[in-house]
Amino acid sequence: MMNPLHTFFVLFSAFVAVYLESTFNGFRSLFGAQIDLLPSLMVYASLSTGMPTITGLAFAGGLMLDSQSANPLGVSVLPLFAIGFLIQRYRGLILREQKVAQFVLGLSASAAVPLFTLLLLLNTDKQPLLSWFSLWQWLLMTAVGGVACPCWFWVFEKLNFALTYKALNETSFRQDRQIKRGRS
Image 1 (cartoon, rainbow, N blue to C red):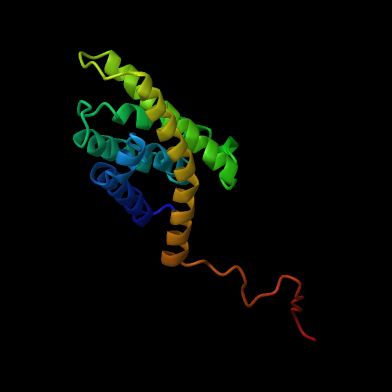
Image 2 (image 1 turned 30 degrees about the vertical axis):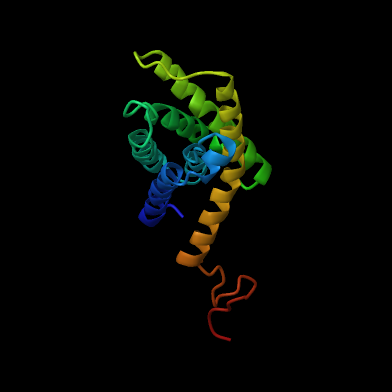
């Protein structure tokens, strides 16, 4: 499903994910950590769409996330784009349909994006708050991203099934039929 509607749904999902992350405090209150669904969504976009959608998701999702957090505006764009670019570059080697591969890629992306963002923050004049509790937050964010990644594939598969049509493979012409030409 590589069409403008699919790109719209990916970007709209990023908007909804950032909105829910910033307004729903139940998970944060219960576990003491904020979840981030954008890396797992980037895994889906990298394996299912092209570079324009990946770039749009990195910019729109990163800027939306930074505008709702204490991060400097734009610091999340590069880590999201780097993960999306890397996965998209090697997507021919990845078993896209396997749930385990989706889980591992979501786990890896959800672990790498915060670390890359932290590296960028440490190279600016901003001093992030780091403690041993940050390790718990990072592990929980990684686990939730790993679980969320197969969920993105399932949601978009259902959207694809509901909103697009499948072309019929059969025609009225049978391949095993012999056509006799001439006078008989």
